[in-house]
Length: 299
Image (cartoon, rainbow, N blue to C red; front, side):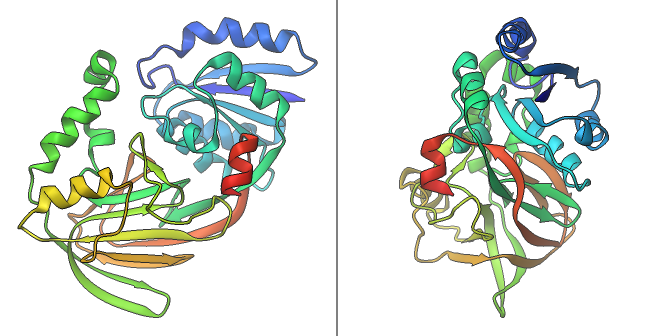
């Protein structure tokens, strides 16, 4: 089989490049072919994924959630899609964690070489594809707003510091959500949509009963209440994503959300767009390597 390693040299703490020799050595002991491509600029991996999809059986994607998102957006442009295999190389590594991929490089490569792929859902927000998360409002911008210098210096703590600062801001915006023949006008402070139970490096085991191939996406709308605003949000995370009485939870394969142009949307930890959005789920759209444990639990 032919493998292409795609990696982002500035992902996370920028340490993956020093591991390439180990990856080469592990593949040298197999019958597989391995080529390597280093990202040169923004959206480079998206372009390369589209261009080289028909030439390889497996794409090894080393990097964080943004790097994986870039490759997914490239592959959703073509009919023949190689298997995606994720090597954790970012800071939060939500995608790798929800797939059950070990952070240890040797263990990750071993799992990738041994496991058969599963078919995972891919979601689309307007023109942008994503795997697991969509958000706006409180905490939604910190994943792409924290400087590379702070990430390199503090790692995951850089996001924690930014989150504490963002919780002090009073977010308030209106939106209209349409799904399942319902239409609601709401004033909110945060919108969080998930296809899994992990976001921002945290497990939200009580958020929903979602699967990674059920063709559904789940949105939680956090209504804006000035009193105890910060307490309510902290309580949500401490309780593993359990729904509070005042908030709304929607499950569907399609959503239409109308919002003002100053409402920014985050997908898979990256800024996606502003304003009104449509969400659609493409069931079992992409082959991806997952651990046996995750296959049993989430597929």
